[in-house]
Every structure is written in structure tokens, then in C-alpha cells.
Amino acid sequence: MSTEVADTTNLSEKKDFLVRSSSLKDVRSFSREVFEKFKINEDLREELVLAIAEAAQNIVKHAYKDYPDTQDRMAVRISCTEKELEISFFDKGKPVEKSKVKHRAIDDVKPGGLGTFFIQEIMDSIKFKEGDKPWINNLVLTKKL
Amino acid sequence: MTYKVTEEGDTSTVFLDGEIDMDKTEGAKEVIFPLIDAGKNVNLNLSNVQYMDSSGISVLIESHQKALEKGTKLIVKDVSKSVLKVIMMAKLEQILNLE
Image 1 (cartoon, chains in turn cyan, brown):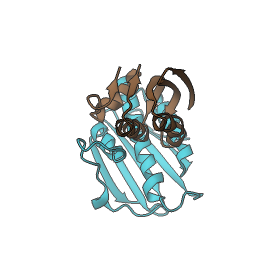
Image 2 (tube, one colour):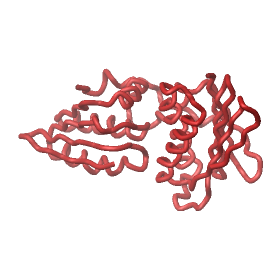
Image 3 (cartoon, chains in turn brown, yellow):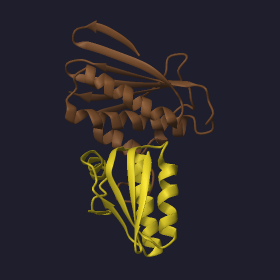
Image 4 (cartoon, one colour):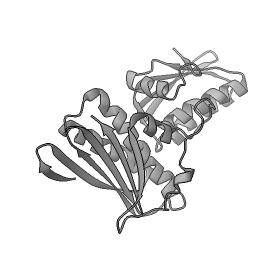
């Protein structure tokens, strides 16, 4: 885990993980450690952990759908100012087709399609960007504090 | 995730333990689905599950729907506060049988 400290009110931590479903518990552990270090409100922490884990899960399930045995890694960066938390995800998988990123209708009860809904419910903004090399995708989530 | 199953008459109680995510859902299904397929009513005790993501919620929905199809009942019991929050976020508190 790398720590970048720009000033006393701007903290950032980044870590990379093998793109596998078995990495999701490590993504959660990293997130919990960072939120504790950044002294994020305890009531908010587990919601944020869920949003982060859902976004990481989407990378495994969708960006690497056809490559379950990939050795590629994905990176998660959590940055925090006094007013805002920014969480960035970087991966080298299939480029995200923004028009296809949507959750199922919430009253159409069936398995699947809730991950993106949870992210939208928890976070204030979701932006898909092209990643700077070597990354292909860069998802940026923000939450006002 | 670990689990324990107890039997009483035509009801099986499944005690799940740990964090249920995409990596654990197949294991959860392998425990729950055969009980429903065998015509058992299933109590799913989640008191020791402290984290559940959308994949875990999908297992609850699938189990609930499978029980309806088979004419049995799935009751989700003793849900921890953190998991209840996720169930409510998915607006499933009126759909699932919660006790």
C-alpha cells in the first residue's frame, strides 16, 4: 500500500490487486484500513466499502468476463480532502461501454443487476474515463463528506 | 464463509457465517438449493454474516423464488444490522420473509 500525502488535508492511498473474485476480500480490507486511517465517519465506512467492492466486482465480472485466469492487476486509489472522498479504479480489461452500464429496474425483482444500483445509491458521482497508459479503464467515484 | 445446517421436521435451518461476496455465492447456493429442491422449508440464519454484497443479495432472491416455485418457504432470520441495511437498500424488506 502506498501513501501519498500532499498536505495535511489531502491524503491518498493506492493498492493493486489481482483481477479475481478472491481478491474482493482484500479490496475490502484495504478500504477499511484506509477509512480508519482517514478517520471517515464510521456510519459511512461500510457503505463506502460496499460501493468499492461492487465496482471492483464489476471489473472482475465485466471487464475480464472472458479472461477468468488473467494475471492482470487492478488498482484502487482512495483520496480524501476535508470536503470530498474520491475513489478511482484502474484496469486493463475490455473498454467499458458506458451506454451498457445500467442497473435493473429495482421493482423487477430478480437475481443480478444490483451492483451498479448500490454504487449509485451510495456515491454522489460516477464517471467513466479512459485510463492513462497502461490502464484502459478509469472509474472515478466521489462522495461529499 | 462457513455454515452449519440443523434439521427439525420438514424445516432445515442454515447458519451462514462470515462475509458473503461473489467468491462465496456458489458455496451458499450449494448448501441452500438442494434443501429447497428436497421440498424443505428453509430458515436462513444470518446473525453471523456481517457483510453481504449484491451477489449475496442475488442468492437470497434466487432462494426465495426457488422456494416459491417448489411450494416451500424460505425465511431469512436474525439478520445483522449491516446486512439489513443492504437488504433495505435493495428494497427487498417487503419481498423476502424476514424474521
